[in-house]
Length: 361
Image 1 (cartoon, helix red, strand yellow):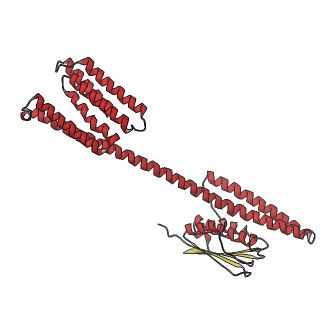
Image 2 (spheres, helix red, strand yellow):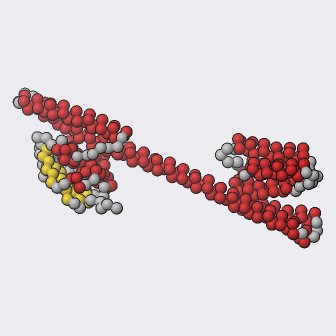
Image 3 (cartoon, rainbow, N blue to C red):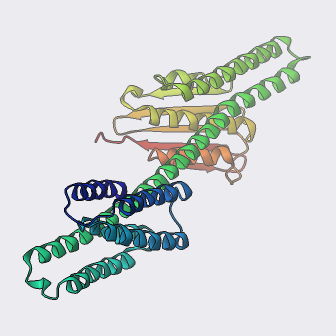
C-alpha cells in the first residue's frame, strides 16, 4: 500500500509544482519521498518475517517525521494523505488498539491544523469535505490492516493444519506398513520355521516328508518375496484388485483348512483385506505360539456383512496382546468390526472377526 501512495503523492505534488498550484519545494519534496521509499525497502529486507516492536516503533517515528517534512514541502497540501499510513503500519506491529488510537490522533491533529490555518474553517465546505475524506481514509486503512492481519493468521493456521495432516498421514502410513510387514513376513517366516523344523524332525524317519517340507519352505520364501514386492509397488501406484478367496487359500497347508461361503464380490477391498490380515495373524499365532496341529479358517459372506473364524487345537490363548494382535484389533475396529477371542487352557483357541457392510452414501 505504501509504495502506491508514495507514487500517487509524487505525481500529484509534481503536477501542482509544475502548474504553480502551491509553493512546493521540489528538492525536499522528492527527497522526502525517496527517503520513505528507502525506509520501506530497508524494513522489508531487514525484517522479512515481521518487524519487532522496538524497531517498529523507531521506524514509525521516522515515517511520521518524513511525512511531516514531505507535507511541509508540498505546497498543494495533497501529501497530508500520507498520514493514513501511520495507523496502517502500526496495526501490524502493535495491534488494533494502538492503530485506532493513532488514527484518532491523526484526525484530531488534522482538525487542529485546520483551526490554526483558519479559525472559521468549519464554515468552509471544502475544508470540511477534506477533513471528512481524511477521516474516512483513516477508517478504511485501519480496516484494511485488520483484514490483512486476519488473513495472515488464517494462512498460518491453514499451514499448521496442513503440516499436522501431513504428519498424521505419514504416521498412519508408517503404521500401515508396520502392520503389513508383520502380517505378511511374520506369517511366511513362521511357516518357514515350522516347515524346516518338520524337515529336521523327519530327516531320518521319512526322507519324502522332509523333502516336501523343505519344498514348502521354499514356496513360503518365494511368496514372502512376492508380498514384499507387492507392498513396494503399492507405494508407487494404486493397488489392483484383491481376490480374498485366492489369497486365503494360499494360507492352506497340511495343517490348515480353509472354507469360504457366500459372495465376496459384494464387499469392498477394505473389508476383504481386513479379514485376510486377521486370518494371517490367526494362523501365524496358532502355529508359532499355540503349537497347534490343526487350524481351521472359515469365512462367510452375507449382503450385510462378513464373518471370519479361525480355530485351532493348540494349547490355548494365555491373554495379552502383542503387536500382531493389537494391529489386527486396530484394523478390525477401523473397518467398523469387532474381534473376539475365546480359549481354554489346552483346549484350543477360536478367533472371530465380524465386520458389517458399510451402506453406500
